[in-house]
Length: 70
Image (cartoon, rainbow, N blue to C red; front, side, top):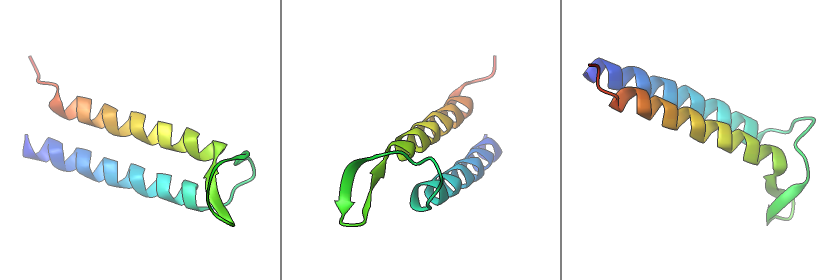
C-alpha cells in the first residue's frame, strides 16, 4: 500500500512540474488573456487547458491509489 502511494506521489510531482513549466512559459498558441494578474502577466486560455489536464491527471492518480483490489 505504501509503495502505491509513493508511485502516485512521484507521478503527481512530475505532472505538477510539467504543468508549471507550461503555465509559466510562453508558447505559440496560448490564446487570449482571460484574467490579468499584473501589467504583463495573466491567465491565458491555454493555461486553463493545462490546469484542466493537470486536475484530471491528479484525480486519476488519486482514484487509482484509493481503489481497492478485489
